[in-house]
Image 1 (cartoon, rainbow, N blue to C red):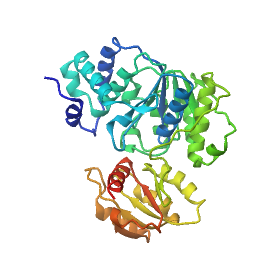
Image 2 (cartoon, helix red, strand yellow; image 1 turned 90 degrees about the vertical axis):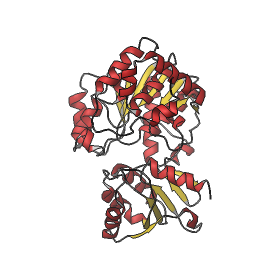
Image 3 (cartoon, helix red, strand yellow; image 1 turned 60 degrees about the horizontal axis):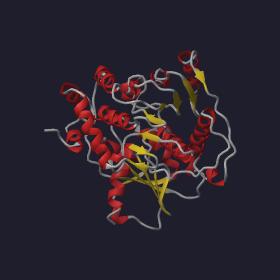
Length: 376
């Protein structure tokens, strides 16, 4: 008897130490005989993949295109990972795609596919015969599950140090594995490190580079945080390359990207020094200080994140996250105290309307905060 999608995924590990690319490759070789892929736009990078993908997908839909945007992870609901023409995928469509994959793939492959790989295959199946598939990579590029299909256009968002245990411990190594996923056309978004351009000249010399243009933005666009303005400029350059020019658009609301939950609460799902730097630029424009509601995975450079944000925060409140990857509390507290910052445990009941809060650290921190906030 076939299991439901939820129970099937519940038995899949979210984390893994080694990638066996043959599993997803063999699965795709079989699935490819059952669907017809649309024009694929593959997004790789360290930061900005989700916002760039949502900008692009939303504007394509406004241009009357049939679009699926695949992203990860989700904040509150699994359905957030597959967005079709303006809405998160329905349970019914997910169940149907799951049923088809259970029929098409062998039991051996179904058992070996990881959570992310299987979710990617769901997205690919549901993209059948659409106009565009905006496909956001997970943590990698060359050996990411999303790279199992040939892409027509690659967007390389801002690259920094993250996931070093998988991708390498230098900007050059990380940029290389991400750029090796490019098959045809590519565009480079705003970068903080010159090494990214050096790698581009080595790795992508035979590919077609789309030049990033500067478009005049309206008042609403200019009110976006600078990092989101950069991602919007990349999006508009891609649309120009695709033949869409001189059109009006409405910006989508971005969930968890410098999102103002209330007058005194800002939430961002960023989790690394690159994201912290972008947030710090925005906070520097404000004549106020924030309480940082925070936690971190153990493999992140949380000391550097806290150092970057320190000028703009009065204290750190640690939010409890039930995840084996989260840093030990005593280690995090020690780093916070070493920076001469006040530290407390976060209690959502004690949120003070007279104080300002920054929710930051990961998708998980955002999830825990939002679930608690909705009950207050």
